[in-house]
Length: 126
Image 1 (spheres, helix red, strand yellow):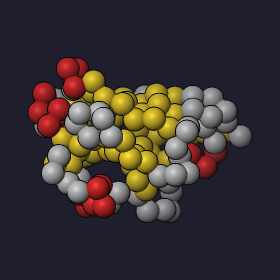
Image 2 (cartoon, rainbow, N blue to C red):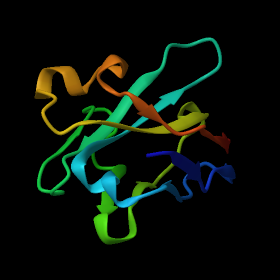
Image 3 (cartoon, rainbow, N blue to C red):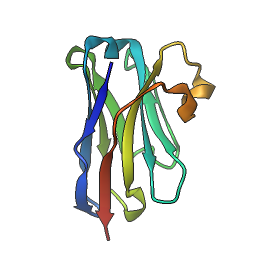
């Protein structure tokens, strides 16, 4: 399966964006979906993950309440809704897939994810 992230752009602080992760085939539904981001000069950062059933979501506490991950397995598509954006949210955002068997403690690390999209740039101006 291949992934393509889209929906990034330039927005003002306080505004919203929705990123989309489109998979090439329905095997998407068998994986845990995650979003990561990487700002210039910084390491790739976990944003959040969602099991294939969509029932359990994991995210960093600093983003909870502003960012929401969802998925539509029938469309082989994942989403990252970002609200109340801040300049520090500026980064390249990546979607990624990990085996459903990945344990929770490993889900927060990039190494668990074997399939990655190409990234989409999000720039938030103040």
